[in-house]
Image: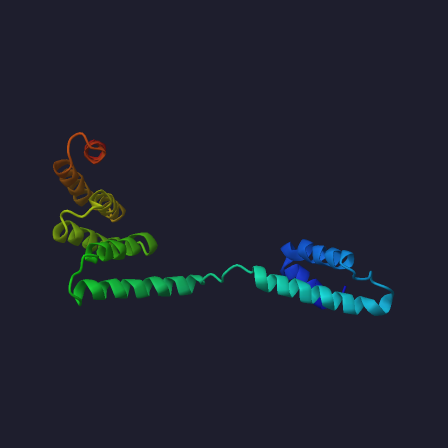
Length: 179
């Protein structure tokens, strides 16, 4: 086997079977078997071309590198902050603020800043549909920052705000008993 073919198969090992299948199909469709040493380089070149074309057509989308993902997330943070502070509020402003806080919380573990936006959500959008999630994430931020009294304050607010027969109320009371 020549070096190009070896390189193609070692780089794209999972396509070895596909290339072998292409050779078998070509043979049964009227192709001729390899005849003698002079025809081997041509056959290998054909297989390399087949493997490379198969790789091109089956290659998964290129995923962003870690640096690119972080850059994209930082750009999203800047965009959401611009929307929150510079633009007129829209019906999606609460969602933008939640997305911003979630990126800071989940992707960067910037709990102090994330907690600021979760608190803003509670004040500026008291009827926010994802209030339960906001409370959960806010309490987690305080827990990670080891601000136990602020965490307990979140649970006290949950217990006051949610009905006594709700899961949120029961969770808040449970957490207050644990701490």
